[in-house]
Image (cartoon, rainbow, N blue to C red; front, side, top):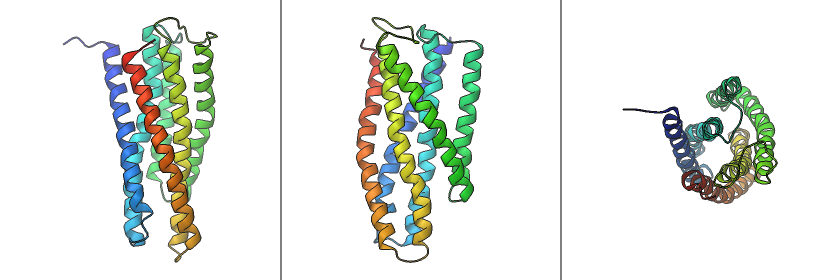
Length: 226
């Protein structure tokens, strides 16, 4: 069997995409029971715990897609930075993923909330950079070396940046669950219940856009139409 570096990266990229899409669907379905007032608070918390455990795989998948895509882009001759830059990039993303997992392990604690906010702060830096590179390259201004037959790459990168924006919004909603359930544990609270239902309704609407965007990312990466 003769496996190339690109073959392995492509396999990992597909795997990350599967965990991303499947995980988000699992969180979406679990959220119905998180806000179900007919269930006891402890049962709702168990569903919330299930959502967190599913979400960490989706979160890992979406984070892995960027370094995998940039690495493959270099092999394709589209992304010009290789060598030490690729090594540094992988180290940086490994640290970011470790941060996301640390926040997950510390969930439901004050430390977990702080780590989640740091994770969100990293996204504030990554999202504008991804969108800037994608849009600028689509306009022919670099830094990606694209032309006829490779414009799918910056288009995919731009869609991915948009997906990160939606994902950040969904992170806000899930982070709020910890605080709201702490207050609900103190006793019935109609205001917190209403806020929880409102936020999850917004999150579900965002999730539909999310899935369409993910489908677009998959389509561009698979078909490379332009």
